[in-house]
Figure 1 (cartoon, rainbow, N blue to C red):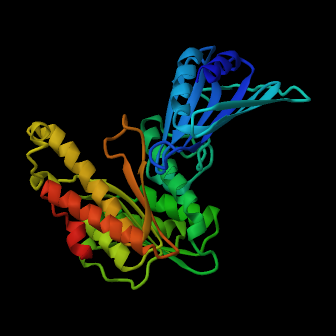
Figure 2: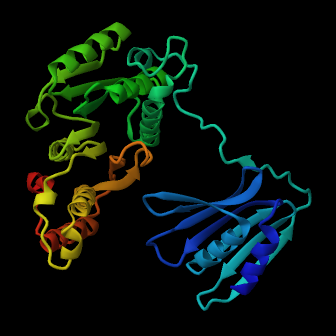
Figure 3: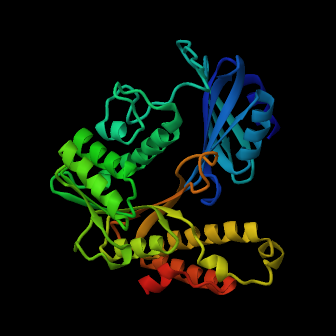
Length: 383
């Protein structure tokens, strides 16, 4: 690896453009790494964006630290493509560890544009775009400016719409799409979803919001009528008992408390929903169930047990969805400094049947539950 390290020391400077590490030796863990230069307080840093199958991680390192980090990464990869102002490089590593470095001079020197790290983010709903529901919900002023004390809510709404944008290919545009939002509450995200899909993307869409609070439902229906959202309706009711539709294209459940999330997920699977978006909340069930002598040194601390139980709950939920034919991701909804409830489960119904994979998921779930003496509601509902 010394020749790779030497090359990086020579190239990770102001003339560096980008590098991509690919072709991992295993399909587990990090499967790709992108490297690009950024300026932070007038100093050059290298931003490393590493990808697993379900997540992306970022770190900003000074050039010397970036060299060491990339060299470590290259122990797990077979290839790296790198570009500088004047040269393109291909670095290949054989199964036996032999390193081959190929370089090709660029005929016309390229301009290097290093972006500032704190550049403003482009949101789907931009400040200055007058959005009626955001104004009435107190997130935006009448002239389209974001209320500073509600910026976290504005950011959360846009983050949610990014998840919607990703699954657009799964939604038919030549027929009416039905979406159910369980536990919609004040419905910031429900209105955002309707506005984005119907007003901006021109989908024929029907959204039904369900919640137990009658005054909230009445208020949301009044707003929907005021905006002329004819196919956005809100109903008072319980997730477990709802039987108002036979087929659903997408189910959304945001911060449905404890096992209400499990009932919503089970309903979605029963309807064969193409897409499921779920942000769990207030997870107590497994906290009272988990028992394991091996983990006793950790489980004796209430706070740690509570957090562990929440992670196990969401992990098993994701695996249960996999076992029912969904390609499932566990994603970060919003940053940890804004709320600890930052996990989003995104499940998309697979177009092909993967019997072996589903069987393996069920076996892994059973082993995990036996190890922890846990019996989650979702498992009982699906079985």
